Amino acid sequence: MDEIDRNILAQLQMDSGRSHADLAEVVHLSASQVSRRISRLQAEGVIRGQVALLDEQALGLQVEAFVAVAMASYAPDAVRAFHDRISALEEVLDCCATTGASDYLLRVVARDLRAYSRLMNEEILGHGDVASVRSSVVLDRIKRTTALPLGGP
Image (cartoon, rainbow, N blue to C red):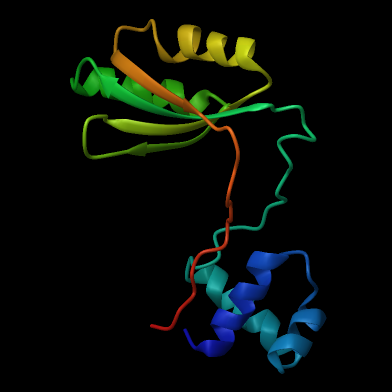
């Protein structure tokens, strides 16, 4: 990957809906060259997909929280059941296995505190596989980006 590829990726991270002709002007290539580079980056798995970023507030999702989960059991069936259950919950935006005092860290959104409470009590707790959770509700977002750093090799 060269500097032109990184520039194309930076532009796509800002607005993936830009035309190849618009990108070509920015990176000083022809639209067909940009198209070929984007196709190559997709084939290599560097570009996994293109999505629309939606606004939580505009959609009425008023609560965002980070939830640290400690498992009660590490039996393969219990872990698989937890993974399956969490993967099916649209309110869980991210689930990462972590080191430290908790086993997983979830990023969750909900319409309001009542919906968040229902999610926690009915969907995350109460299945016998989770020993404890520690929630931190977001009061104010200082920074959020989906753009990955694209420094040189």
